[in-house]
Amino acid sequence: MATFITAQKLITGAGTLVDCGTESARFGKSCLLVTGRSSLRKAGITDRLMDLLAEHSIAAHVFDGVNAEPTLHMLDEGRKLVHDLNADFVIGAGGGSAMDAGKVIAGLANEEAPSIEFHEGKKVEKLGIPFIAIPTTSGTGSEVTKNGVITNGAAQVKKSIRDDGFMAKVVILDPELTIPVPPDITANTGMDALTQAIESYTSIHATPITEALSIKAISLICRSLPVVCKNGNNIDARTDMAYGSLMAGMALANARLGAVHGLAHPLGVRYGIPHGLVCGVLLPRVMRLNAEAAGEKYAKIARMVKKDAIEFVEELSDKVGLPKNLREFDISREAFDAIIEESMPSGSLKANPKPITEDDLRTILEEIT
Ligand SMILES: [Fe+2]
Image 1 (tube, rainbow, N blue to C red):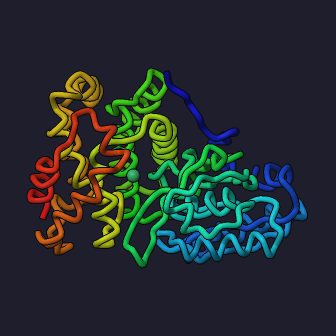
Image 2 (cartoon, rainbow, N blue to C red):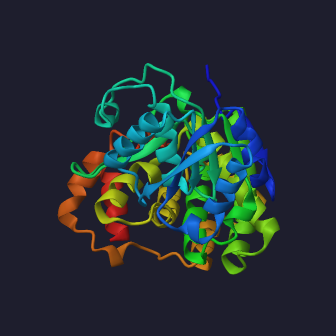
């Protein structure tokens, strides 16, 4: 038995940002616009969004306090704004962090308990307000997931708050918005998308529906990631990446992921390493571990890329400028036990095609540090 859930409406293609006003008007006249700290403003996207909303007489308040990792503190701040403004809906525009923050702020809009209680497992009981997702990077797939990854800064814990009701009402996937993304972020987020496509493909929860999405995502990303890292203005390649990351997101939201993501979260939160970079470094190692269990699927990828799948991933990662290990981040051996302890219960790890032991994780940690 399996269920499949995704966003209600996907509007895709270059130039579709222009639809934001009409789509928003269906949800009301007051909006909280959640964005990252500055890149959106610098690229002129915040102003364009405000103009499009103003054309439909929608009053929008910008909440641009979202850091690289959204925290419980930001979440509480955003929820208070929704309450004070009596907002009808939330737009999350930006990378995964801004969309995750916007999604959870909207999803908890009618709840009263502090955000930490939901982070610690309290169930969401009251349906929130509508959420519109506008991705401006191609990587996380957060526009089509029902969870937001939130960090409890004090406890150094990165965990999801999730509910079916968090799913976006509308996604506007306009690849033109990804044109200003610099090469290093394009590479990191792209490797995250590739990891998500491969891990959802080989997950023990994969279904024919998710496999079709994952394999198409893998083909689009493998074809176009090296191109966008070299020439960020190539709109066809940017479009491939936007679709690839969206489809990987649709797959992972239903099939879950694997050991790369199980290990990536504790490493990322402890050492402040960009998520896509950790994924890119871990991916070939985990694939080697899974080579037997996922053999048939890796063979399908190999036929597509005309090369051994693991070698292809290693070469791609090298080509887009990712490091081969995480030595520059000074990960101490004393931290291994804690990292392993945090990884083992993760839902991603449990979806890995081969059961993962503590020793497997230790071997990987030794290899990358
Ligand atoms: Fe990821």
